[in-house]
Length: 311
Image 1 (tube, helix red, strand yellow):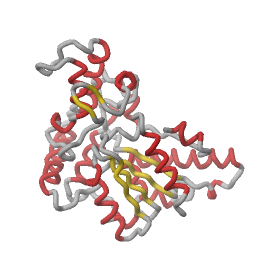
Image 2 (cartoon, one colour):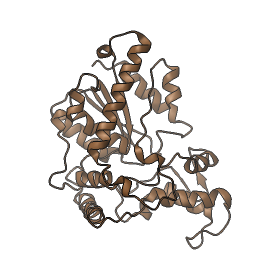
Image 3 (cartoon, one colour):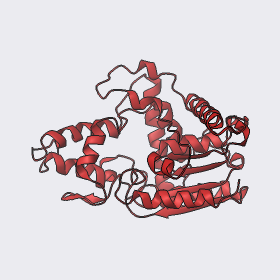
Image 4 (tube, helix red, strand yellow):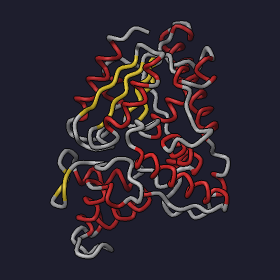
């Protein structure tokens, strides 16, 4: 994706979150104790400041004249939206001119009380873990474990009765919702497919990337707490929609958060910002932005929006 935009003459910078460098076999998470949402927002400011300054140096244009479009996926979209509403976006070198949050839910439409309730329960569980200084691995940690078995012994018997290792990996990828106590949406999944294979992504490549750092096994608990607090309508957890004042393109992935995610951008941020646009792209799953064979079709749609949207 970065190469795609670089080939189209953008100056491209990648900001990866801190937790992507945590090894899968880590068992001491004390160093993550202060990895709060505020720390992630500060990381984002430093990165945007650096990217603008570096592009200014390369282009010999004043830094304040460099336009920045930020694309964030999943937790990255959550951070990006919170960043746009924060004081960091008001700083001259930290401002963002356009944002593209991809597949996230900031707040549910009130017509889905059961989903809101589920995230309230998730919030309570995470808050209890933080209070008791307990860390439970995320679903992605389990997926990495299964991917390692599927990669080394695809036809071997998996821990899930009746399924081979590769079938279990496909189940976790294509029917993710059935393995979660509190799924975000009724059909939430990472990639589309079934037990016989995945539809839009090269399976061997996906396994390799999952095992070689393409998936972060552990997420800071404060990030998960913040996300569940937002979606569960917990007091004290909200993003000020009126502060989201840049042009916004929300992209919902049909098999991921989809229309559930577009509601807040259209109905909350859209109340005070006339430059909010949303689109739902294919029914392929939450990770379809990245390595599906037809992902460039989505990148092209984002590119077209950037070029046709005035700041």
